[in-house]
Image (cartoon, rainbow, N blue to C red):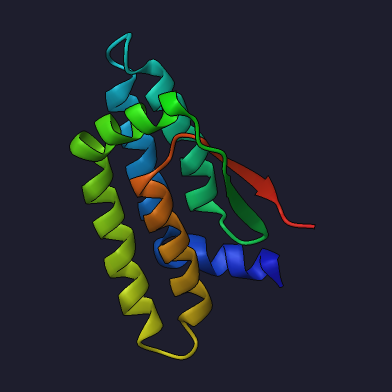
Length: 122
């Protein structure tokens, strides 16, 4: 079921979300200081392309909180708003609720991407 969920997700919005994360990562990688932030964006782009059967584990540290605040001010809010609006629109229909849940997962991750790890569910 997760395979079909990922395919439907990719066709109906996952490509746009993943591409926005990928584009954000490319912009961050232009500067040397932004390369670690860009690499995290690329990891999250993979999650945004295929979110089903994956979960996010938050492991915070002092440094990740500082980077999260820096991230939030520059790139986090637009990406979180994009995923939140997508989640609201998807949850309007009963069929779209599982997809809306994935959008809300990505919206939360857009606000605090550092100190987060993406793992496969078992």
